[in-house]
Image (cartoon, one colour):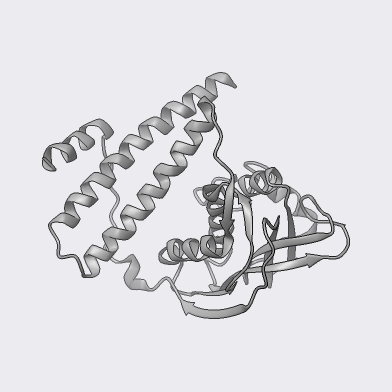
Length: 275
């Protein structure tokens, strides 16, 4: 296990170098463009995603070599809006996305990056469930009160107030007898090359570490809803709002290219160009 941990840390370090090159070259490209325009805005999205990935790598390295993130109050409403903004270009044009986010929902105490990772994994999983026939992906955030304790699909809930984050899709659904299995690492029903089988395992790990619970409700071939319950860090009075947009237009997928980079060389080239 120690050898695997060291190998993973080495790969994370190398990946961070690649991200440094991406961030640097993107900033150089923006410097040659007007401050407004579609290309400049698209490069802003590249920068945001690369910096977020770099933050995730730094968090992994911090855990590997010691040190813990400082718990802070996290607004899951803000996290959900940010995740929607990042996920929407990756969805098929046949997938419609809805959000129902309380305008003044409470905060939960924890690591902001973990919460973003949790919601992102749930949204990506929902999108994959509808990749063939399309459908509706709904993200909801709201305060809820649990009057009496109960057992959920993952974990248990005690009486009290929670922030509930629900991600629903109208995909192929989950059979009742497989609900526990889907949270196991590398247990996946996706075809080879689609997903890694660890997304929901990561979600379970994050939720469990923050004294939360997950409820899975599904009707095969109709819909699935994953609801995460996290203890509230403060009291609020929410007001619900609903917004609806269609994401994933075909234009967002035009002209996509894949590229490989060599980390030190590209980072060095970027530094030289920026002098």
